[in-house]
Amino acid sequence: MNTKDIVYVALFAALMAVLGLFPPFTLPITGVPITAQSLAPMLAGAILGARRGALSVVLFLVLVALGLPLLAGGRGGFGVFLGPTGGFMIGWAISAFIIGFLIEKFWNRLNVVNTAAIIAFGGIVVLYGLGNAWVAVAVDISYWKATVGSLPFLVGDALKVFVATGAALAVRRAYPLVSHA
Amino acid sequence: MSLANGLYQDRSSPLHRVPAGVKVLALVIVGTVVFLINDWRILLAVLAGVTALYGIARFSPRVLWAQIKPLLWLLAAFFAVQLWLNDWQAGLVVVTRLASVVLFAGLVTLTTRVSVMLAALERAMTPLRVVGVNPEKVGLAFSLVLRFIPVIASVASEVREAQKARGLDRNMIALSVPLIIHTLKMADDVADAIEARSYDPIEKA
Image (cartoon, rainbow over all chains, first blue to last red; front, side, top):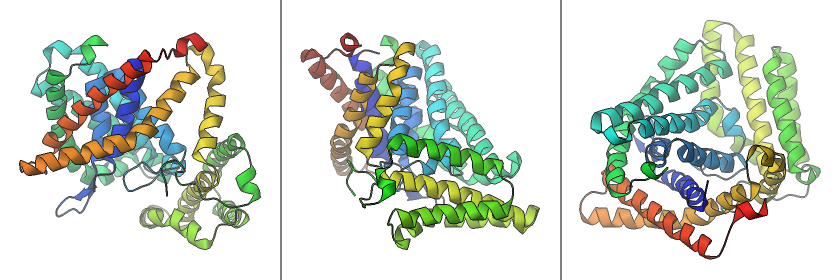
């Protein structure tokens, strides 16, 4: 990690906090709120790569744990990690790492289809896999029930995969960072 | 509520004076123990104990309520699920367990300044030097985040204004791409500025 890497990691963590300031927009019919904040782990992995991307999410999460109200809705503190959604937050770091790892692997062959597939895999399959396991253990319900309970949020996250793919490919053209990693 | 102080609330209480490291350790122990207990009577006693600690920390019931309020719907839903699948005792176990942990964690956050927590974290990381973690670098990263949140927030609102003029203020890609590129450019400038001042955390190690 040279100075530049540290600054990328730190400024992306700050960006993640800023995305939490955007007012959440509520999905019609289901009423599930969607925040821009959970876009950040996808973007961090896809733009900074595995190591820096995951570290920037970890840095953000440590600041939240220390008591800064940086989560969307002004929440923070240790409590949010121990609550039922804690697994999704730990999962953000892991999903950023996996997305970053795959993006690095396919860097020279990236297109809309494989980028979207990578982001969907890390940002939905891996994230929900971990998050739902946590919910199941924390509130003592079966894994299957936890998965069904999380389905309404899937719409928002599918939308985010679409946005993150567009943004990641545009930034890759304008400001490629992974090739120098 | 300022960013530098976070969720900390100043009071003069014995709990505010307990070292940050001890409080975090206590949280880890409480968090582990409540998941090992399966008797709702003991868990109810734990919850009562945690609630009493709010009194010792001189927090009004309003502060306690603010901690538990965001969870209320979720707790009610979990109770209902347990009631449906098992019985009310099982529901009470899940609810008291979660409420105890979240309230205790909230207490740690409310009684400890972010700067104190950060200092404790940096001290705790010193042994990690052996495996290649440099506490100075981590410290730099932390201060950079705190410094740049307001800066990036103002860039975000500039971008939003600019895209609004183009009728693109509801297009998430049109909003995020300029914001990301601006952030990365800024990171390059900041890194150059830091290096121009001969900052070298490796030397100190």
